[in-house]
Amino acid sequence: FPFIGNRDITTLNTPDLLIPVRAAEAKQIYEIASRLQQRISAVMRYAVQSGIIRYNPALDMAGALTTVKRQHRPALDLSRLPELLSRIGSYKGQPVTQLAVMLNLLVFIRSSELRYARWSEIDIDNAMWTIPAEREPLPGVKFSHRGSKMRTPHL
Image 1 (cartoon, helix red, strand yellow):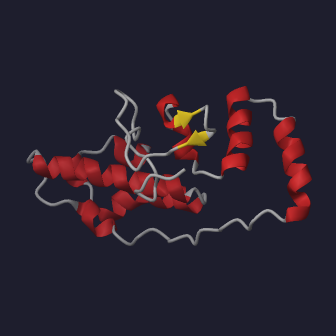
Image 2 (cartoon, rainbow, N blue to C red):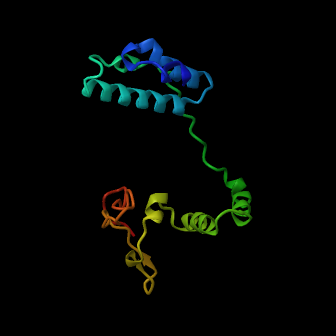
Image 3 (cartoon, one colour):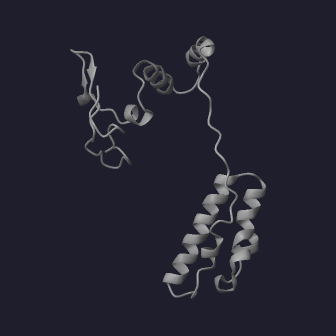
């Protein structure tokens, strides 16, 4: 944002910091506005910790954003199930995505439980998949330690 990007950080005050946040909010990109506020707060906090400024003007930005009520999507009406299955069948994206959605319709699990599934959890002979409460983390894979959200093993 040109208005604050070239200015000396010691001259910035709360109204100045709100300009880019309000610009994003005016465009109704509320998630971006929230992230901007977080980044600005982090930069200003770093400036205080580094002795560049004495007071963090971003602290007074709290509550400045409009809270947007989330819109929850209604459940799929049973009469539209054939349409859903048809659309899944004609999906042109990654085949693994199509297969994951189809598998999810059969086993009704959370997407993270499917994404982090391990072959060692699946007993092919007994047609049983046991999702553990915790998993061994995979090196370099964020959240791979998560198991069942219920925190108990389930079948």
